[in-house]
Structure formats: C-alpha cells, structure tokens
Image (cartoon, helix red, strand yellow):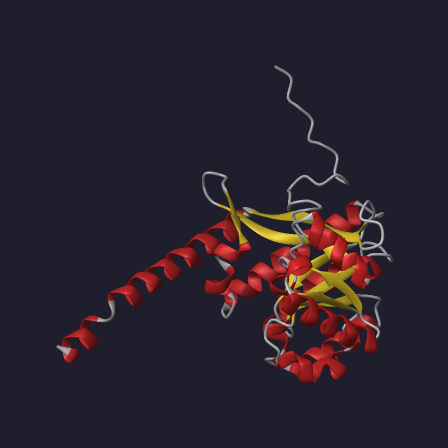
Amino acid sequence: MAAQQVERGDPLSLVLEERERQTMKMVEAALTAGRVRLAFQPVVMGADTGRTAFHEGLIRVLDEAGRIIPARDFMGAIEGNDIGRRIDCAALELGLRTLARHSDIRLSINMSARSIGYPRWMRVLNKGLQASPTIGERLILEITESSAILVPEIVTAFMDDLQRKGIGFALDGFGSGYSALRYLKEFFFDIIKIDGQFIRNIHDDPDNQALTRALLAMARQFEMFTIAEAVETLEEAQFLQSLGVDCMQGYLFGAPTLQPAFMPAPARRRA
C-alpha cells in the first residue's frame, strides 16, 4: 500500500501542484499580454491621518475576463522563479512611470531580494530614473523580511548603492519571522513596516501591545521610520497614535485601488 501511494503520489499534493502550474500559466499569460496594473493604497501620517505620506503600489494581474487577481493569490507560486522576477520588473516599470507622470507624489514598490542582480530589473530602474531628477528621491523599495534574510550581505550592498541615488528602502512585515532582528543593525533600512499580526486588535491585546512597543523601540534605536500595517479600526489607530507610530496603512484609511485620488478619472465616452 505504501509503495502504491508513493508511485501514485499524494492526491492533495497533486492537486496543489496542478493549481500552482495553472497559477504560473495565468501570470505568464498576463505578463505577455500586458494585463498587469498597480493598485495604490495610501500610507497616512500617524499624528494627522488626513495627510498622506506616500502610496504603496501593489501589483495586480488581470485574467482574460478583466478580473483583478491580487498578489496574495499568485505570489507564493511565482516568488522563486523567473516569473517572479518578471513581475518585479513589471511593478517597478509601472511605478516609475507613475512617478514620472505625477511629480507631487511618493511611491513605494515591492520587490523580492531575489531580483537583486537580475539584469532586466536594473535596466528598468536605470531607465526610469533618467526620466526626471526627482524620481529617485520619491521612490521607496519595499523588501519583505523573509526575502531579505536569504542574502543579507547582498541586500545591504544593494541598498547602500541605491540609497546614494536618493532611493529609500522599507523592510516589509517586520517582526513576522524574527530572524531579521539580528541583521537589523547592518541593514540600514529607512522604514520599518510592522507586520499586521501585531496590529490587529492592539487596543485590546496586551501581547500585541508589548510586542509592538518593543518593535517601535528597536526601530527608533536605529533611527528608522515606523509604519503600522493592516490598521482596520479607529480603536487600533488611536492606540497606535498613543504609541507614537510615524505612519499607518490599512483599510481604515483606504483600500488598494486602480484609480487613486491623485490620478484624474478616465474620460467618459459620449453616447
């Protein structure tokens, strides 16, 4: 029986593998057809939530019917292969194009540490920076904690080079894996984004309160700007304000949208 199971494979594993193959096929088709967009979510000032500090540009893929597929539904399947690098290139290209068209905004774009040294990604960056002398200082690159710790030495050298060009760096999901803590002193990130698991229900959760206070203290020690992610309720926001968090991001302040306020609404076609 065991031998038969090995030969035939675990049914659940086969289903998951097929789903992953279909996801990769869908993303590759969307990239080839140019069906990729950025959805923009505001990051607001902690002391004055009516002010937007910058927007995060989140990559979205459209299927053949035009339905929006969020990154969480495909990023896990493509993160470790060439399609993941192409997605990073597409996100960066769209972000740089947005910064060139809107000179009064700042924008953060996600990337994997795996894309460091990817020739096409660097070509996209260098070409985009040439469009305007202010683009570099208005661009923030977000690297997840989980990918940053894979190659910490390469990440720090990469950051040092681009920070000289005015580009900022954010460590996304800070605290989610804990292993990045020992590298924090060497990384020199400009911004720390505190993972949403510590923010949810923080006003009524003593454990999350203690953990967030500790993460904020570490960020301040290294003079890093702090952002609380996944803020969804007024009570959470008010408690975070009492802690002195620099910025907040979450559905309380706006969901990711393809048509943010800084973009003019598309003209309606006349009947």
